[in-house]
Image (cartoon, rainbow over all chains, first blue to last red; front, side, top):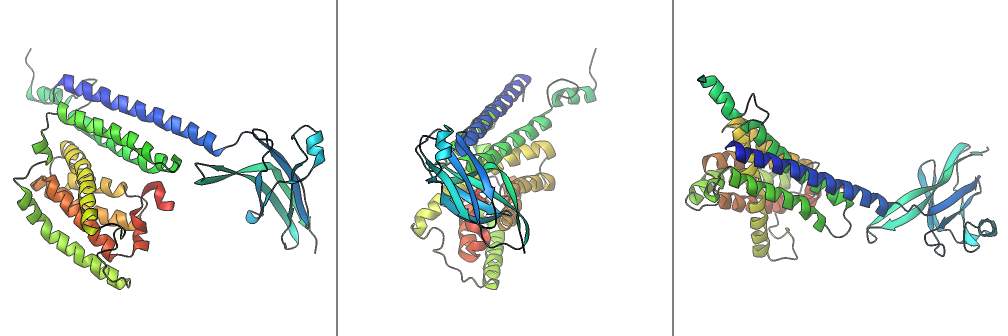
Length: 145
Length: 236
């Protein structure tokens, strides 16, 4: 192979690498926006041996009721729609109406310290993917003997 | 001032200059093709939704690279294996290993309690049509593996065991993380690459590829092969 051909091949290899780098960057950025809903707002207010409560709003679609999942000590514990009465969220101007609260019945737990996490479910990829976004902060609570 | 023989050889190889040597360039070409396959298998398959058309982008880039490389290196279709004069000699070389692997697969399948079923490979399709599709897919894979990777591996390490091992290893790597398929593609890769170096004929290799895929699917447990899934889709 002569030097001219070699130089052309090198340019081609570099161009291909750059095209792939651009493609990967575009896909990663697109994937991030597809799998993440930046408009989700919410708080895990309270967790105790009886209930786990809080609220969640999709500010991009304020009329929608968001599906949420409860995990206790990293174990799936339940799935509900955040459609409970929470006038305080509305009056704090975080939602357009009063119905964005959630309440889970806490599963039976051994005595000791436990951690509750609530995730909003975000459906994407034409329904082929469901991703979870943590709502508020994990809540640690104690179960007495 | 005249150059010594060593200086001339170094100059041909590109050593001592800013341009890479032929060997380095061939290795770069292999890496580039493999990276396209890995991007398609691991990144785009994971990120794509229902439509998987996006994986055609790295495939098209790899194809453009391969064609341009053949032109720049002055490789003719006949050199690459698109020929018929050595079809039968190539098949002759493939016959014994194919029969041996088929018997091995049938034996392994029976050990796992699977009775051979020739209609298990996409049962919703006609077997003849499926074999024809398998031949076309085999031709694409064998073209990439032999006409590009194997030939570039021979520039890096010459004809022989090392280039055959490198090509077979790459072929197995591209089937990661499916353990059965990695093992079988490594064995198949060794045979196909060695045969290609003696009798380069892509049509015979594609035929062998289709028949061996049919044998694998018909004899080994589908759960072990995980429906031939590779890359990110292995976990899907």
